[in-house]
Length: 162
Image 1: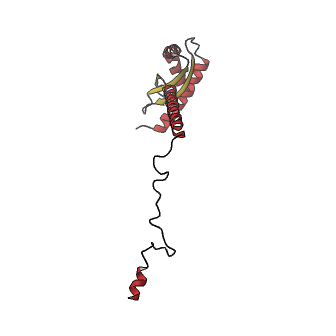
Image 2: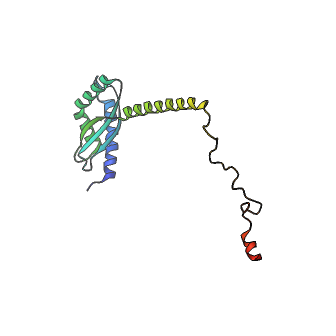
Image 3: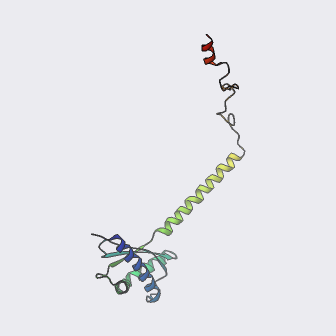
């Protein structure tokens, strides 16, 4: 039986421990500007996936990934020491796709904004093909002062008079 609350708490603690250990103990020159964004732990608390981002180009990302892989043992022992769980989870580092997704969304929003501006520019000098309000009635169904339609008469008065 899995305890999801315990797994979430352990994941949060792993995220903090890994970030602090990278900042204080790991002195690998290949390690760039790495940010730990998230950590997830399986239900049995045996495996942890740590998500990270790297500020820089593709070569810096590859170098930071290699540095994280080589520091995996030190990071795992720090996690075991700080969390106090019976079995220290194995760590897997995964580059987070959030910055790439955000960049793609920004590009899509910019394209949509350009398309809206083009439509707005085209519509600026345009006029309606027909009437401005095609649903407006032409006065056929006007009501008289009593609320009946004109020419209809009051049918109840006529029937009582007969």
